[in-house]
Image (cartoon, rainbow, N blue to C red; front, side, top):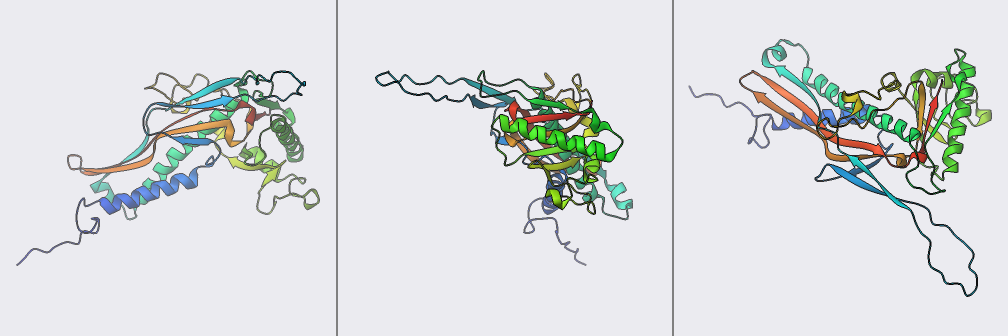
Length: 329
């Protein structure tokens, strides 16, 4: 009797690797999970490079204007220049090894769940690094020795820590308006401003009457537990403050970042007592050498499949004047 010919459901046009189509599904699930989980997408300027370990961002001061005296020679104004260099961190990976026997024993699909968790792990780490970099920007001095360029801004209001929701909400509203004022004074564009806020303070704010009261043109909703905007700033709640609102200025682990094979930790920063970070995309930059990629390989010696997601990015401060940190103590 002739042997049966199995259908190669994992091959492209019945050729190539048995897992080719399965890998595409896995990669798509990881990418989708990454995009859904990330809260900082669009919060920074992004540049992709094809090779190298860093990228330069030029910074120029402002040009002044003056009245002309008839007959006087026009020689031109001097313009201050500087540059910011962002270095790529080491390759960041998230991986799962799935053995044949364990997958066979399971009564549900674990590959889909694993791909979701892998994408989420990388998204969470990228978000933490971006938020830490925004915090660095808020604490940084001016890039250019120019009266038109300012340093970052840090605001402190102890009433934000109040256990009374209305008191805490009013204090947060006050500081968000102060943050908007600081950005206005530094000529930061109004479009694209956003605030990443600690969950506890966000829900106190959602419970405050002013931000949801239509008499105050409030755009939030107590029923939905949402605050959309305050002082022209989009409000984005995030659970990452549990991890980043600490002093990690000496952190040599993943949260501290790692560049040039662990030679430095560019995301080290002390964000203890921070409850919100306000920024414009021009405040920070991300350089991508290797965007999110996925690999999968069956290991016959270990009787299982290794699934790996990875990226190589770097994050750095570009315009400190476009970032504001808000503290409760």
